[in-house]
Length: 283
Image (cartoon, rainbow, N blue to C red; front, side):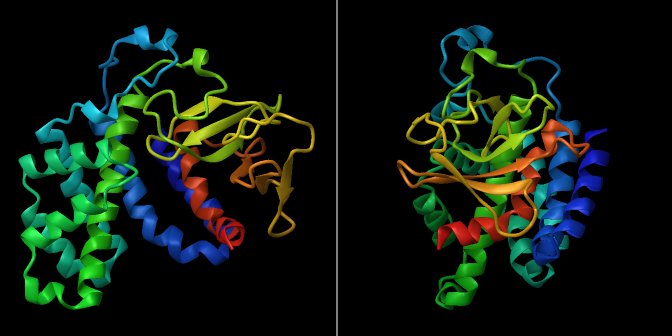
C-alpha cells in the first residue's frame, strides 16, 4: 500500500538526514493523514474531461476548481487534528481553527487558496482579522503563529484536493517537456530519476504529479545545452544535488531514486530531506 511505503520512506529519510529530523518529525503525522484522506476520498474515475490531454494545457483550471463543502471540511478537520500532533506548542491556536472551520468556510478558503496559489497573503490576513480577537492579534508572536497555522492548513488541504484529482487521471504523455504541471499548472519543486534508463521527471509542488522532462534542459528558461546544468552537492551523497542553470541562474533540487523502493505518489516527500541543500542554494 502507498501509506506503508510512505511510512518506511519517511523512516529511511530520517536516518539519512539527521539534520532534518525535526522537520521530518513535524510533517510525518501530516503526510500520513493526507495519504489516509486520499485513500478515503479516492475518485473512482476522472472528474474531468480527458480531451485536454491533447490540448497541452493543464487539466485543472485552478481559477474555477470545483471544491465540495463536505470533502473540504473533512480534509481540513482531519489535517488540523494531525497538526495538533505535529505542533503541540500551537494546540490552543489549532483548537480555535477546529471550531472556526465549518463546511462552507472550508470550501471557500480552499477554493480561494487554490485559485491564488501565488498570492494568498490577502486571503489569510482578511480571514484572521475577521475571526480572531484584535487585542490578541496585537501580539506579534501570536499573529505570526495564527498565520502560520492557517497557511499550513490551506497549503496541505489544497495539496490533498489537487492530488485527489491528479491520481484519478491517466498518464499525460502529451505533456512531456512542459515546464508547469500538466494537471494543475503548478510549478515543479523537484526533479527525480526513478527508472534504470535514467529518465528524468519533474515533481509538482502543488499536487505531487510527475511528468517527463529532458535531463539537459532548464525547467525555467528552457535552455538545452551540454554542461549548462551544473550539479551542486552539499555532501558526499551524489544521489542528491541541485541543478543550477548557467544561463538564467535558477536551480531545482534533484534526487536519484533508482536504488530505492518508492511509490511515485510518495516522491514529493523527499523535498524535506533536501531542505538543507535548498537553504544552501538560496544564500
